[in-house]
Amino acid sequence: MKTIQKHLKTLGVLSALLLGGHGHMQGLTGDLGAHDPGLFKDGDTYYVFSTGDEYYGNGNIQIRASKDLKNWEKLGTVLPEKPDWIMPELFVVPNLWAPEVYLKDGMYYLYYAASHFGTNESAIGLLTNTTLDPKNPNYKWEDKGMVLRSKAGMDNWNAIDPARLDTPDGRAWLAFGSFWDGIKMRELDPKTGLLLDSNPELYKLASRGGGAIEAPALIERDGYYYLFVSFDRCCAGLDSTYKMIVGRSKSITGPYLDKAGRDLAQGGGGLLLETTGRFIGPGGQSVYQDGNRYLLAHHYYDGDLMGSITLQVTALQWDTEGWPAVNPQDYGVAP
Image (cartoon, rainbow, N blue to C red; front, top):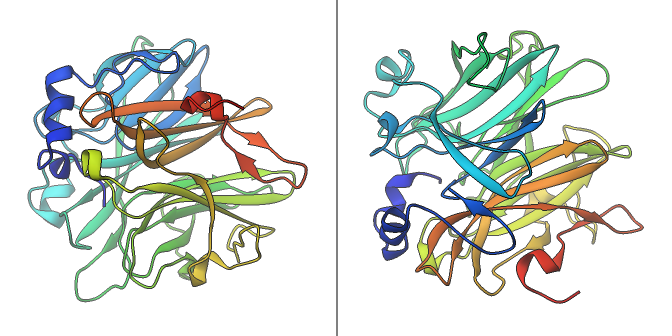
């Protein structure tokens, strides 16, 4: 599960707070303390939305911006206070988690999670805006309320880590999930961004039978849908074992298979990135199509900065069979 609360229990987190979350490798500069980054572009500016910190901005989703994907500036939080629907549903939650942004017909849909750590007492909420630029006079996040709710003792899934993708037939889909029975999917109303009542089916995309899996990200490329997830232990600073896994499918609802043909719903998955040098526990990923390239944004724990939370952005590479890989040079490894 993904929350700043866990960070405060490790020396790595304390160093992140003391150092301001700044990193300095691979050309990225500025404020890089983004956990669970969701990357999107508006105009000539890239924005990263990330998990909130209960000691900053009332725990709301954080925003950073960059013109070149290299130098990042912290812009504050999306809202001054948490949305009103959260207290009646979940009582007090210290911070909001794992945002993702999607653009549809000129409207930006920002999905995020509210949860009690270690349980599936969780919910996914939605905000909308016509611009991501805080300087735009039309900039205003509108609270659209709760999208999805999971309850302890009732559901075998967890309503966190949302990721939306629409298909060419005009339908909209939301992947989500963490631990329990893994990554699930529901169909959305493409205009409201809320659940489509006419299709109550809960699709199973990936699972480790209760093991550590979370943070779905979805893209479409050359007739395949790609599902990226994070395996293993997050949020433990230098002890983190997070890694990124990928599978693909001809259908957005699956089955998602890895390169060896194993079904992610049965514990399969091909390795995309694991701990490499100072890049410890990479995960919490987002994938954004930027023209002809696909940008992977994720966090890691910097081994040279006592495990501080650090943002990384890299362009995916693709082999002749259409499988993604990271650029090893972005992780200090010679090609």
